[in-house]
Image (cartoon, rainbow, N blue to C red; front, side):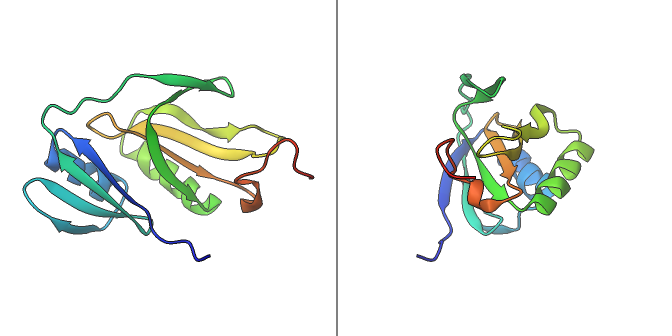
Length: 144
């Protein structure tokens, strides 16, 4: 099966702030737009910021490897080089990390680089990378 782009629509309270964040900070090319929504190309996937002036992020977290991971969240599994580049770009833009860039599950199945931060509307994003992409769905039962 050939992997196809996913589509995700999510609420934002301010389209100009979303445009500055997704287009400017994350570097997502902009697609179609209206006065109610903006399409962005997030590493080949279509995300759509829809205006909802009352939008507020849900404040819930689950513990994962000693960190409080925001739920819900979305993001992309990147190459390690792209992950490093994005983490530097986000930090340089002054974005506050909810969970700073680090290696999760070190030495275990599923070892990954990960980071979390929020857009201006409070939508949580996670970007991760694996040294070995075969570890994406690895479990502790998988052979090494």
